[in-house]
Structure formats: C-alpha cells, structure tokens
Length: 345
DNA sequence: GAAACTTGACCGGAGTC
DNA sequence: GACTCCGGTCAAGTTTC
Image (tube, rainbow, N blue to C red; front, side):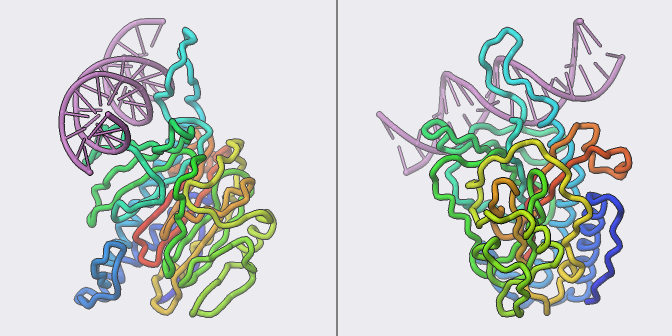
C-alpha cells in the first residue's frame, strides 16, 4: 500500500484529525482489498483468532473513535480547568462532584476490558445522555488505605466491534501492581503527554522499548527488532527527557497543571505507519510527561491527549484559528493491532 | 464477615431564559 | 438570578466470596 504524503494542516489538532481520518480511510481500503481473507493472522489479546478482515474493522473503528475523542477531549479538559471549586459556599467540606482538577487525564480505547495492573473498585454507574451504554466509575482500591486518587471511567462505545473507552483521572500514588509493561511484541505509539515541552518518542518495533530514555533515539534498528525512531521525536526526546524512564500505567506522578502548548506542529503519525504496510514493523512510540521525566508506557496501543485550556478554546473543532490559547498535548499509542487507543486528556 | 457491587440520591457546574 | 439539566460521587442496601 502506498504511503500517502503528509500534508498537515497548520493546526496540530486538525492535523492529527486529518491523520486519523487518513488512517480510517486506509483501513477501509484494506478491508476492500482483502475482503475474503479468513485465515487468522495471529491471536488477539483475548486469544481469539484475528483475521485481516476483523483487524481492518477494528482499525477503522479505532480511528473513528479516536477522532470522536479528539473532538470531545478538549471540552472535557476545559471543564477541568474552569470548574474548579471544591467547597460549598457555606464552607462545608464537600466532595468534588465534578471532574477533579489538576489531575493527569488520559483515555484508552480498547476492544476489551483488560487488567491494567491496578486494583479498581467500582463506585458508580451512570446512564449518560445520548450514550447507548452506561458509564461505569471506578476508583483505586487503595483510595483510603493509601490515599490514591486515581479514578477511571469505562464506557462501552457503540462501535462495531464493541470498544471500551477508558478514561483515567489522576495518577496512582499507591503501591499496587502497576506492572503495565506492555507484553512483548505489542507495539505502541505515544505522542507527547501532559505539560510543557514533553518528550515524544515514536518508533516501530516488535518489542516494546525497555527504556526509551536510555535508548539511543537515533538508533534505527532493523525490522527484527526493534527500535526505530523518527528524528523529530528524537530531537524532542533528547531535549528534555534526561530523567525519563519507562513507567507503567498509573505509576506516573501527577504533572503540574500549568500546561504550555507542546503540540506545535510535531506530527509523528507517519503515513508509513498508518498505511498498515505489512512490511513495516509494528510500532512503538513512547513519550512522557516531561517534567515527570518518565514516558507513559501505558499499554499496547494508545492514543492519549492532554489538554489544559479554557473551555472556549477547547472544542477541537475546525475553528482552530480562534483557539490560540489551546494547549493540548497528545499522546497517541497504537498497538500493532490498533486495538487499543489512548487519549490522554 | 469482609469486600465488592448496585443503584437511588445528592450535589454542583453549566446552559438557558 | 432562577431554573433546569446533566455528570460525578456518595452511601445504604445487596450480593459474592
């Protein structure tokens, strides 16, 4: 499959959406090209057989959902910024009903609910307007014994095949399993994260990068193995990731909320990646919340996007010219099966 | 009996008038 | 400013182990 040329929009978010749209269209093309193939390629996370057909279907669904998330994530993050009161006017201590502020937030889109390495306790379920499925609310099981403030929301999407949008709020401060090291041969993409000039690491490899910081960014190894990094990502990475090291999901410390734009024109979704060229090795992309110094290796297949902006600047719509204040960091991880998608908000 | 889950109620932010 | 809607959380009751 040919690799379409990159022609990004001026605005990074719009460009990201363009890339996602391109990927979705390419997935559709893939489905048309190989409509009849039934032979399994390998096994998915649930042990089921994966065919080209259902793989492409999953890819398409993932892109569709990712685009949807991108279009919505901004407003959610804006809510975080703008609705910040934590106490009632009478001074009584109150729980915060709204989205907790200053919490690192990111989202995952996965084909199935899988163990993410943390112990979660469900504390609520809510029917959401215009949503086909209810939203489930989970908090860390160590909320009370260790004061861990991490929460997550899980909501099934209406896509076919079924996908689950998992939104994480806050970082785990507990000492739980936290072993989210992605399994071998599962690839990732992480495009930036959280605040400020964070590092962005992108590579294609059949193995996860054990230590993206320690890894030599310039190293373009061969298909066997391994680490292939885009120069741009390398430059970013080198400039600011001295203390970075791989860390499992939820183990990252909460980054400061003062977010500066860090998505200024760095697009790492190479068309070579998105064309699903079978000759291309699976991808691994790692990034980090810069000041925290550790890449967000969450799980195979992640898109994440971190925003911190006023609501009015946060629509992620076409009206980007009016959104100069938009600060949106974006982590994108895509598994080799494109089955999981993360969006750090 | 402890832990986890379910679910209705409550609260506060946002939108509308 | 009042009202309404909606999402997030609480907490009592229920279920599971």
